[in-house]
Each structure stands twice: as structure tokens, then as C-alpha cells.
Length: 280
Image 1 (cartoon, one colour):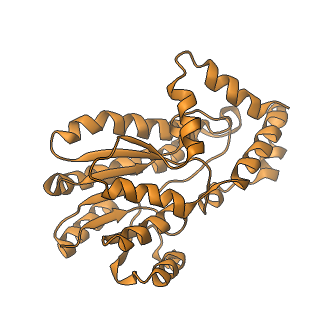
Image 2 (cartoon, rainbow, N blue to C red):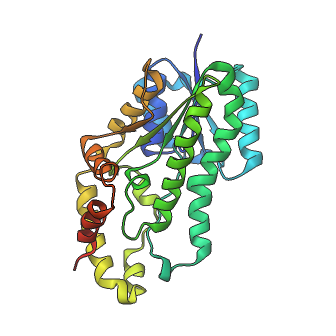
């Protein structure tokens, strides 16, 4: 019997590659995105891999309860069960508190945290029935706070704390919870940040020297980014392996970076590292 996985944020990048990799592993991949007219990248990847028949593309806005409910109800009606969810949808954000509106911070939380919670809540009864898995793509930014990423890291920290707290409770009813932490990934996600470096610099005021240093450092990091396909491979291992840990990083670089925080009891290691990112 073909198992079904619902994946959010599949129009490009990690999500698209995860949907195709899941289908190549024999799963039916319900590939969701806000705007299905943007499915061209996913469709071409699936066609090239010969798995288009196992890709089911559906509209889903993770921030809209009606959309989430309708999508999950449709999946169960059509396929009878749901065996896993991959919470991948999200949006980056660059800014610092003094220079942005509180509404901007709220929006980042809505997309990256509450959207993930909405999908997970809707899926849990079905995953409980199937003994399924919740796999959530967070970020090393959910472990290490990063300059000019206060809102984004806050949202990802919240997701990590939520899932870490949920994991032992969900396990009592047969549901496995995993978080997957990519570092820099060469994907459309960078474009989704909507980064206007010129505009940011023009309004940076006293933060201009720090922002200049941060943007230069970030450009260098993404110049050596992991491929989206490689990151998706780690997600598929979390989907299919018999035993899986709660926390997984997608690359050696991500493991080393997360390890700085997890071994840093007083915070000096992290602050010492990230201070160098904004040194002019």
C-alpha cells in the first residue's frame, strides 16, 4: 500500500526536491504551495525523475485555517490516510528591531511558527491513526541566534521549542516528531527573503557598518551553500528510516554550527562567534 506524505512549501528549493525524492522512494507526495500556478519547477523535476504520477499538487496557505482544514480533509477523502507531514514552508526575513515595524515581526512569526503549528495540529489525528511522523524543517537559525535575523530566529527557536516539547507527548500515541536543521542552502528561499540590500542600507543609520559586514559575510556563506537536493536527502532519511533521532542537521557545516550552541552553557561561544559577523 502506497504511503502518503504531505509536504508544505514545494514550489521550489528544499520542498520541491523533497517531494520528488519522496516519490522516488515510493511515497505519494501531496505537494502543497500557496499558488499552484508556481508549480512549474516541481513539475519539471518530477517529470525528469519519472515520478510525476506520484506527485499530487494542491493549494495550501499554512497561515489560513480554512485552507489547512480543506487541504487535510481532501487528502483523507482521496487517499484514506496520512502517514507523514513535512513542515517545510517558511519565509526568511532580514532586519533589526529598531528599524522595523512590530507588524513585520508578527508576520514572520505567523508564517514560520503559527503556520507550522496549524498544519501539525490538523494532521495529528490522522498521524495518530497511522503511527506517522511530523518532520519539521527549521534551521540552524532555530538553534543559534543570528545578527539581523531577530524575528526569523525567534520564530525558528519557537518551532524548535514547540516540537521538542511535543515529541515525548506525541510518542505516547505513536507519532514520531523530528526537526531538521539546514544551514545555508542554495535554493529559492534566499529570494523569498525579499532582501533589498540597497534599501536596507539606505535606512540603516547607525547600524550601517554592522549591516555592511553582515551582508558581506552572508554572501560568502551562501556562495558555498549545500544543494537543495542534498538537504532533501536528509529529510527523506528521516521519513523512511526505522529509527530516527529528534534533531538532525543536513550537512557537516550545519552540525558544527549547531554544536557551538548545544555545547555553550553561558552563551559566550555563540556571542563571540556572531559578533565577528558584524565587526566592521
